[in-house]
Length: 360
Image (tube, rainbow, N blue to C red; front, side):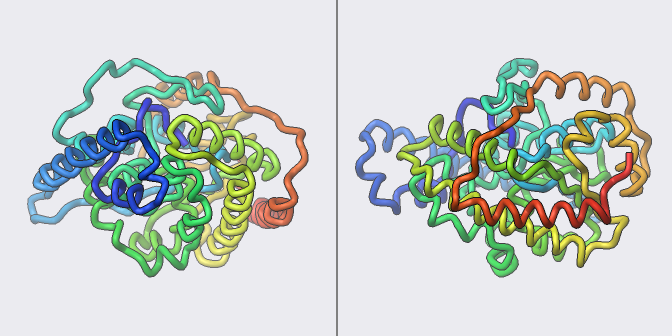
């Protein structure tokens, strides 16, 4: 995940979710007033933005089947997003768009384009124009997302449904706003007819719904040692909740939430294996991507049948940029609540990697 803009945006729907919790009334009046004011203008800007539809000559909004980069949080999705976007020059949501989804069409990219922040979890530099995960747009517009826990970490148990594919198959309330956002980012990239590259670990849980809506979409699943993924998630979620949270986080709640996410990730990986044809998806070992990035991207190109040429200079620059981040190693014991789920994800990954691993 890339959340490094310095703030999270808020809309009336997200404000409603915050207000429905009793802890809202315990917040300082100044905090509640500030968030309410920001949400009001978020709603105004969103309504104005919806009038800026992008259509082609036939009156239809062009949105080809996307390319989804998925896998557990902290599994290497960000590096893949950076490299694949550079190599393909395909359109993708950017930080300045995702972190201000209600107003970016009205304001444009304000501030210094090259100003960078380093992600606290790995030091990777993120710019305003960096490829960004569209989950932050869904969050900012007020739709269901696991990232709501960044605002109220004590509500982890109430967000378990966001990890359930069945929920997303039966609930399409988010789809219209999401597609509207995607159309705007695709148009901003000025690459008509090319698929968007969308990266969000949260989309791992939406894959059945997403592939039902975009049957020709291609899927790239990032795989990393599950024990390291778990410990890295503990670090990431703790840091994000500490930075943005309006309430306190209980580590036990986080451990149970991550265990549920690992269980669902294992099931999602099985679903891909059973459902998607070989030319429509690939599994990429995150360590392989770090060790041999150019070779891995080239192999992925052939596997997923990209029709455009690799942009080698841009890819080389992205490789150098992503190497500024660090990959932490972990040796601590797993909490009891997570041991079975980590083992299940490890087993699912091993089975898929043996059969479907991308060969560089």
